[in-house]
Image (cartoon, rainbow, N blue to C red; front, side, top):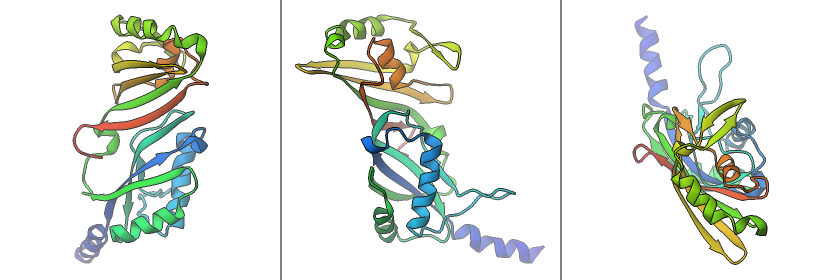
Length: 226
């Protein structure tokens, strides 16, 4: 009994939690969350990172993405935690991963965090998006639609067959009209109690999400997690 406990200590002590920040460009905007998670497993193995696995009958690598990105969006700010064992030198880990990345993903940073730090999803507060609309017929109507949306207390939308109020999930909303486009910037709640989606917002403003260019520009966490 004593020997088993003593042997377990070095294994836990050798584990390291790394926080990876990266971007996703337009070539990956139709890759769903689950497919991206699987792709990261292959990328990290190709980078020769010593992934740590969960226990149980179906062990899985300890890889956690902070927030799912809606299909059709690009992102300047994605955050992922990876647990490895044994620990890695950060500079070497960065070089290995940078070489293994496919087109469409760009590495921004890697930093160690404590193993027992709160899960990324529980620390996420909101997401910031930039949405570009180039539909000429829609651009002229957007400033009024934005003002009406912001003044409303209820904007009903439907998700998975159920009606919900989108308005309280939108924390900020602004628009800049340029000669050939409108640029909408918004901060959306992203917590366990409710998450605002940029495609639902743009649809509520009367534009087509399929033709809009939607980019996540920031993830806001409860503390300096990212």
